[in-house]
Image 1 (cartoon, one colour):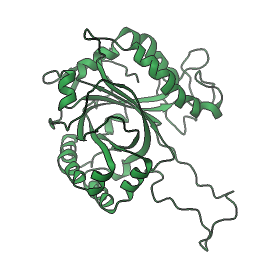
Image 2 (cartoon, rainbow, N blue to C red; image 1 turned 90 degrees about the horizontal axis):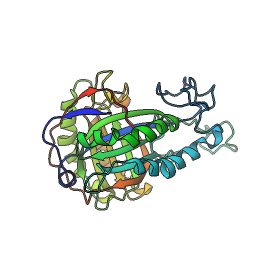
Image 3 (cartoon, rainbow, N blue to C red; image 1 turned 90 degrees about the vertical axis):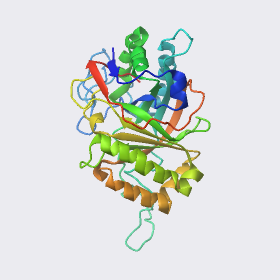
Image 4 (cartoon, helix red, strand yellow; image 1 turned 30 degrees about the vertical axis):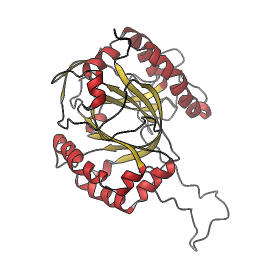
Length: 349
């Protein structure tokens, strides 16, 4: 069970929906596949073999989710949305008012065909030394570079009490946490406070740009988050391309643990200071946004705040599974709220 003590007054779901920052559990995740450990990490308790035991190197042992590697990616994407999503919502606790403590749950699936830091715009064809197309692609197919993560489970709560109620619920611990062991290779939970900079008019956007941000080492986490929100965000708002193309922009500020052994601690997540989610109406809009000269200049200026060696971004497709919020407005509370955690926990998606 998650036991997290929140400083300050608890929020109701109504106040959270209006103007106060939600508590968001932003869990980075990777799919259960047979990639060798030398090429991709695996959580110590993640992935089971055909006998229900935690396996070692996935390249050497058939995993319980899918034994045919050629089907794994398609099957995992389908299963996460079409089977795991309904299982998770079926297991959610119901409050006295008939609602769930989970206010919003989006599955964010990384889309390799979209822009990323590993394959950024512009896209150029491979050419020979004379600037001509090769007469064959054999030997000239660009190598594929894969992100550490295949997606995000984005779960929004009014406060950490609601998060604790959800993940402490008997059905979640009985049926969902064991399922997570089978279908996910690694789970990296990041406890966040959500700051809405550009609220969504519909909460139906599906095309997202995900940015995982680490601060400049010269800044403290609080200093970075304050400047990211109070200096960078207004400059983004002032850009014509943002007004024209961006449907939603939120900053998730990491308020989770940085000490090993605490609930929700992860060796990668502890170093991620923020996650930006920028929503668009289409892939074309996202691409136009990234190549806009003013946006490119603003992105360059952001290097004063971040560690450019560890700035990761990628395109994603969002599937909304739960949304009990009636609408969005800009959040009014900008002060970071740090969390104290008092006993071990697991995070499900």
